[in-house]
Structures are given as C-alpha cells and as structure tokens.
Image (cartoon, rainbow, N blue to C red; front, side):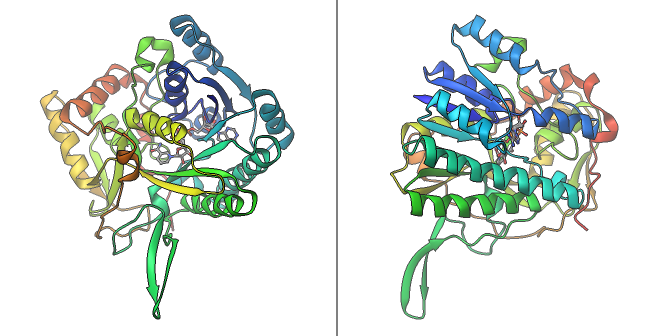
Length: 382
Ligand code: NAD
C-alpha cells in the first residue's frame, strides 16, 4: 500500500514509518521538522541523541534495503501538500503532524493560536487534498483520549446512544477537552466527520492514550534509528517523564492529588494499531472512531511503580506531590471502552516491570543529556 506518514520525524511517526516500511508498504514521510525547532525554542532536547531525518532514512535503507521517501514541508502550505499527493498517490494518509503538547498550547495567546492554526488548518488542508487528488485514500488521523475529558459515565468509542424525551439516536460522544491543544483535536474530529458526510471521504480517528516507551524492533536495529524521548515539563508525558526524573535522582513529581486517571499504551502498540487501521479501511463516507489504548492508570500509581523499579535499580527517589499547574479533576470516575482494535487483532504489550526497567536503563544511559531545570512544570493553566 502507498502510505504517507505525516509527522514521520516525530516520536510516534518515526517508529510507525519504519514498521510500515518493514511490513512491505511503500512509505513516504512528510514533516516540516518543527518538533526539532520547539526544542530550540524551549532550550530542551530528546534524552536519546537523534539523527537528522536524512541520516535516519539513509540508515534504514542500509539496514533494511527499503526506501522511505521524504518531503520536508508544512501541511499548511497547500501547494506543497498538493505536490506530495500528486507525486505519491497515497492509498492511506497517516496523520501525526500536529503540535501535540497541552502545556505548549497553554503558554500564551501566541502558542494557543499557533497550535490551533497549525493543527486545525493543517488537517483541513489534508481533507481538501484527499478530496481533490485521492478521493479513495483512507485518512488515519491521530486524535487523543483527552478529547473526551473525564465524564462521570463510561467513555464509549466515538459514539453514544442517547434516549431523549422518548426518542433515540446514536450521536458523537460529548467532548470535554482540557487544553487548547486537546480542543484542536476536537475541532479536527468535527471537520473530518463533516468531510466524510459531504464528500464521502473514508476516515479513522484514533483516539490515542498517552504513549510510553521508545524502542520498537526496528528502531533498535541501529543507534542511528533510535527514537526521540521527551522528558521536559512541556513535551514529556507522564510515565516517560517520571522515569527520566528517576534516572537523574530527581523526585518523581505528581501534579496535585495524583488521582488523575489516564489511558496509556506502549509505542509498540501504536505502530501496530496504525497498521490494523490501514489494513481495515473505513468505508466510503464513514467516520470511524477507535479508542487506541490498552490500560489505564492513575498518575499516583504510575509514580509509585516507577519508584519501585528505580529502587530495585539502585536509584533512591521519592514520589512528591506538587501544586497542579493544570485545571483538571484530580479525583474522578474513569472507565473507557477499547474493544474495536482488539477485535481487529491488537495483542497489547502491557506495562510490566521489565518495560519500566528497560526505559529506565535507556534514560540512565543518556542521563548526561537531561537538562535538570527542564524536568519541572513551567507553564500553568491560570
Ligand atoms: P511529535 O511532536 O513527536 O511529532 C509530530 C511531528 O509532526 C513532528 O515531527 C513535527 O515536526 C511534525 N509536524 C507538526 N506540525 C506539522 C505541520 N504543520 N506540517 C508538517 N509536519 C508537522 O508528536 P508525537 O508524540 O509523535 O504525536 C504524534 C501524534 O499523535 C500527534 O497528533 C499527537 O497529538 C498524537 N498523540 C500523541 C500522544 C503521545 O503520548 N505522544 C498521545 C495521544 C495522541
């Protein structure tokens, strides 16, 4: 299958591009490399030293014999995007290429406007490009479980049956996102659903949980193929961030009470979920939603698990509660459905102690790269 992986230089996109290429697909990466620029802006870095995209794909060709084509450019430049579609004639478009940090979107007005412009307009351009150049192309769009927020009822997969005043309908599940970033994903979902309805586009919205880990079988093949790992207070996500804090002997910092419960998955499952979606495309005009996660945990539980493994590995670290920089429920109900990907064959890689240990050892290996002053939150929602 001819597959475009937009955002293929990023944390989820790079291992996905390699995995799909290994499976025999004809993969093209589109990326404007802006994630590397956010690092410069924030004076931060990936814990692992990452090669340039050019070096990465050259190394991949050397070790696998397979070519990944690259286009460096912005989804918001429609002429560029049109040319990419004309040249590649994609059958699937995997869309990772968005600004994905909630704290980054909450820095100030400029960053909120940038996030929503980059994400919502970029996605709208992709929808138009599919309509204009590749109407059969399946859009596989990365959304987030954060679109749903934390309602006091079970979270369904995209839709909920409602009975109101004696009548019934199946409607999009209500969205209560918690940042301008998460709102951009909700706006994307609405635009995609509408485009499916009016133009007959086929789309799958993957409402992904928080991704942890870094290695996949492919990224392990050579140091130049290593994935990026974010640990700072802006781009570092829970679990990966906790593990990196432990690696430098820092306290593991939990925001507020730590009762916040979130859905998680291993990066090895991210790549497989995308493959499953690609192999089982949505019907024409269908807006399909999958909840892409395997387990859920409270952040306090995760912090304690990291602390336990860190102790076993000889790192004495404390779990410390700090003032929550976000505005969010700290104690709430959480029960989310995730059966659709399982029904299509996903075999989850669950969070075992060995998985935590493996990420910790990688963080320890590169701990000299961790910039200590970046590990605490610097952005508040207020
Ligand atoms: P990332 O920032 O590491 O990667 C995103 C990539 O997209 C970067 O390489 C960036 O340069 C590129 N990009 C951004 N805007 C672009 C544009 N306008 N044009 C071209 N390229 C652009 O992020 P990630 O962690 O790999 O996340 C990928 C996707 O998955 C995002 O959409 C994110 O919202 C979603 N997601 C991620 C997580 C997670 O835990 N990492 C969880 C849920 C959902």
